[in-house]
Image 1 (cartoon, one colour):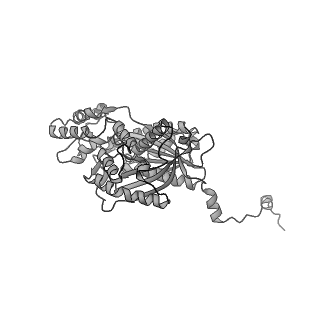
Image 2: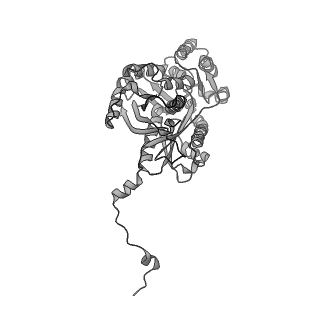
Image 3: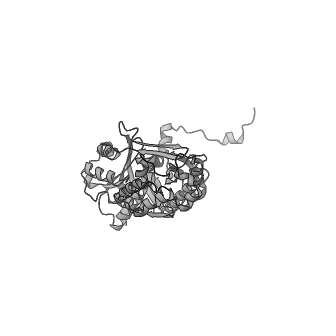
Length: 405
């Protein structure tokens, strides 16, 4: 009789474990929570009241005074005080082709943004990790959202290297989600955190208007509107469930998340990379479209978790796509003028930074809760909008890390 190998003889009979038990053991016990937030912007800052002069100068478009006056009027009504961006005189002197969307410039733009956008994301992420209080190697998942990335390996790979994340970190890239990218990334982070026990998810959103910066054209209102609104920035959030003792401070609990598409809205907001950069279109009826859909999204979200909510009793982290969008949403929901103060403050200080903006709003909300001793609403809603037209909704509850301040 052949001898039995020692390893086989010593092995205990395999326990019968059901797939359900395995699955249950993999899931977190509590809800996903926001554990830390960080933000960053480029160095170049352009005051809004000087932007029309800056833009028409660097694009050599002073021969179009009517368009310049139109841009100046929109800037004056935008509710924006200043914006940050990578585009400056040096960039435009080195790349005069960026001023003309009909010239081939996409390759040059991609070479620049593929470096500076992940670096900006790393700056915001480093702040979030420092606030979090645990080493970067404890990050298990990375979600990187940007409309500027069109090459592989992408910005997620460079970002992971810059931060010193471990080689086993699970990376996901969200591309061309536009202004709802931050909301989509946070919802995905919630799913990952709640379905992977012990997971710590780094969400990093970073955008640069350089990929879509070009001179004005007669009859192209999208360019003028975009030049009055958009800026560059990066926001980072660390999301995890079951916070660890005294180390982690839950800022906001993520109770529920959903996505909805506004019917018959496919062409209202569009983005496409072309030879002269990223081309975008923003329809004139978008604010009204969003205002007409927002309450249904909220009713469905709160109904799904059985919470009866009065809109006036909530705190709000709404993507400030523009002042008119905020005005019409407040009106549609019957909110007081100050309900979206955090969104308006971010719009005022930074402009619309596309998908990353809602993270700045969340950070501003956190700042206000700390300043006020966490007094006020217990429940809130984070909402972001973008191409599709897509509406992201995340229901939030103030975490113990803010209540303890």
